[in-house]
Structures are given as C-alpha cells and as structure tokens.
Length: 286
Image 1 (cartoon, rainbow, N blue to C red):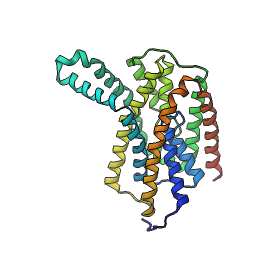
Image 2: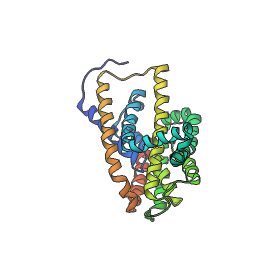
Image 3: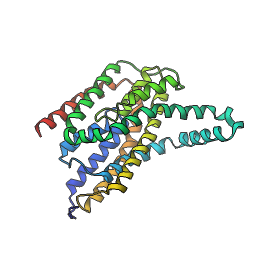
Image 4: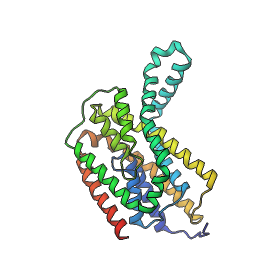
C-alpha cells in the first residue's frame, strides 16, 4: 500500500461522480458497468480501484433497492416459508411462493454466466475494458432503438414461467460490460407483453439476489486476498462514492417508469450509441 494521506478535492469530486454514475446507470437502461468504465477513462482514474470500492458503490445501489421493495420482500419471504412449513396457509401464500420460484428461474442463467465467466470477464476488463464496454453499450443501444417505437401501457400483470425464463436467458448476457441489466431484462419482459409495472418490478427485484450474490463473492475475495487502497484518504473517497451511489440510485427510481411509459427509449438509445463510440475511441487513443 502506498502511504499517501494528502487530501485532494479534485480526486474526491472524481469519486463522487463515479458513485453518481453507478447509482443512476444501475436503474436507467444504459449500463452501469459500461459507464463506470467510460468515466474511469474520462476522469483518468486507476484501472482498478479494488474490491472495497466495488463493494461500497454496489452496496449503495443495493441499499436503495432493498428500501424501495422492502414491503414486497417481506411479503415474499414470509409467504414463501409459510407456504413450505404451514400447509394450511398454502392457498393464501401460493402466489408469493410461485413468484419466488419465478425469480429463482430468472436468476439461474446470469448466476451461471457470472460464476463460469467472471475470471474471463475480469481479465478482459483489465486488458480491453474500454473496448468491451463500448461494444456492450452499442448492443444496448441497438436493443433500445429496436423497441423505442412502442409505448408499453398494457399487457398481462402476472409474470408467467415463460416470462421468467425469457428474462433469465436475456439476463445471462448482462454480466458482460456495457450491457444494461435493467434495460435488457425490462425490455425482454415488455416484449413478451408484460405490463410495464410488472416488468419493472420483476426486473428490479431480480437485481437483489444477483447483487447480494456478487457482493458475497467480493467479500469472500477480501477474506482470501485482502484489499488495498492507494492511501488512507481513499477511504474518504470511497465513502463519498457510496453515498453518491445511494442518492442517485434513488433519483433513477423516480424517473425510470415515465421513461418506458412515454416511449423515450429512443433518446437513451442514441445516448448509448454515443457513449459506446466514445468508450471505444478512448480505448484506442489513450
């Protein structure tokens, strides 16, 4: 560890921006991983801030997701276990039990992708982060453009097994850098004629087990390999990034539903085309 305790306001501002980008893009359909990589290049931050930084900024988004869906989660957990252990309550709890099963079905493909390819993805990010993120952003942009002409104001409200399986298959590619998890999974559900409210709810509830799982892996790595920062002042930078992630994840929640309801995905598509091209150019010329 380099012992450097000099406080740098400009560096603090950079980490605030990085936390802000993580929070907003975790909810909006424009890829958090792609934008974090892009802004690392733009702000000339280290290629890898370390495990502690990754845990803090991702935990910031997770905290907001847990708060927003706290009532849903409580009802789901109670209903799921009550259905298993109290047969007399199964008529009441059947819907919650089946919904948890559907979340499980949709979680498996992405969990397998992350487990089997995480080392390869990490290595690719180290060597070709800007390039891979740029390609992923271009893919996200293409998908958003393809569906941008539709306004998703109707559809069935109950998630079926088919819906869950389709969302899970699509989510299997979202661990790749630059591919928007929220955008891809929500669009997949909407494209299968799921109501906008149900699609967003299912997509964001699906984020919670995946986020907890990935954070668990990061924490396990800390216990086995330890972590480093570039100096003690970086703990302050990391904490600022964490709170920025919390604040702007909450902001993202306020604006995500109107985006889909009013058919403004085209603007996000055009934005992702630009961000993807910029990421590739920065990779090639930096």
